[in-house]
Length: 324
Image 1 (cartoon, rainbow, N blue to C red):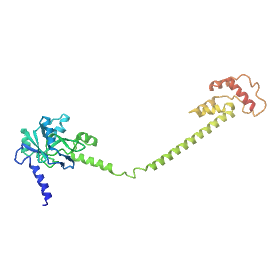
Image 2 (cartoon, helix red, strand yellow):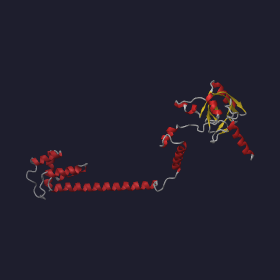
Image 3 (spheres, rainbow, N blue to C red):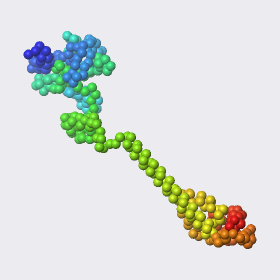
Image 4 (tube, rainbow, N blue to C red):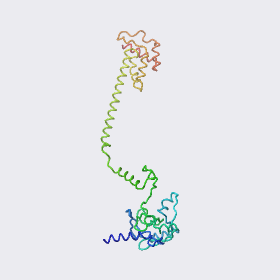
């Protein structure tokens, strides 16, 4: 066997059996392996270039640190859930570039370790995010999923999302197995990384061109409808002039009324009720008798309906009579 492989296997063996080598819960356990760089099985690295400083930080805390199960102190306690200790870290010591801890086990903790229900320990520590330097130990958890190559493994996630919230975000039941949750996340990532289906999407330039064509067509349609409406209004008013229902001088006034929203329909209804106020057969000759005389009742009714001044209307009639 190559030397490198032998060293690797030796490291694994030493750290794997350290908790149980004597068939009992050991009074001293390795917390951090020799540094200065330590690397977890998940690929993350930390810096332990001053083990004595980590030991001193523990001493300054003046309190024993808990040994729990699966980092309950870090994960469950903040949510108000039980996180009982199965042992207590009574002291730390720097040794051979690493850190060891003196442990006082509870009866339950001793049984868990002696029976090999748990074979590894995992330190939880605070570290500087910029330098990755380990600053202070916060707790130790019994676990069976090692990350560091020692009978300790540090939690493989720097930040843990509550599984219930993660399942809710994925749209799967909270009881979904961890492997299925990971598979769901992988599926979402694969979908996000996949190139878009060209059959389902059109280039932006094509969409803009289609939008421009639609806008131009709509504009042309609106212009054509406006022209048709204007032509209908002109025909309606000119016919009323020919029929003698309105004076030629009032033509533009009626056209303006037709251009308002709904105005054409209102003018058409009004013209249907108006009597003849001029003689459409007079193509010339003398003006009607007494062109400056008083308006007839019908002419006054027109003035009231259209809001016209009677004198102005009378003057328009006289002018129309003289010009016809």
